[in-house]
Image 1 (cartoon, one colour):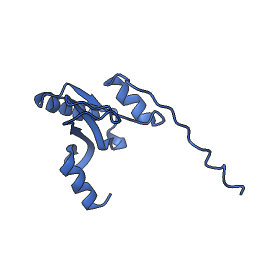
Image 2: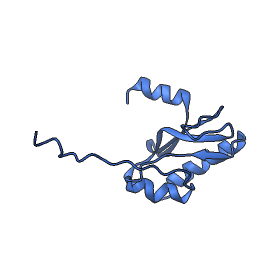
Image 3: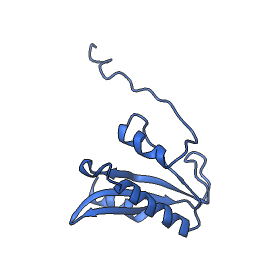
Length: 123
């Protein structure tokens, strides 16, 4: 991402950072919805993890940092009167599949298939 893209993201979303001394070790970005959007599964009483989503550096995973960021986001949303939060994630991502289902109930499951990367190599 460019600096301008990061600044736009921060301007449009809330961004929580987890620090280890002077190093960013984790990030969580989310937005607060102001309207209904059926494609994004949002309502006026909800928030959505988006933008960069969530990322914890590998050395910090499994130590509660992601949970702490998510707890802060939930508390902030509750203060703003938002009772729901939505997240979309790739079920093929092993870190995501271990983390998100602990805190979110599935609403919709979609299926997509990765095209064989070697399918066009013999042409």
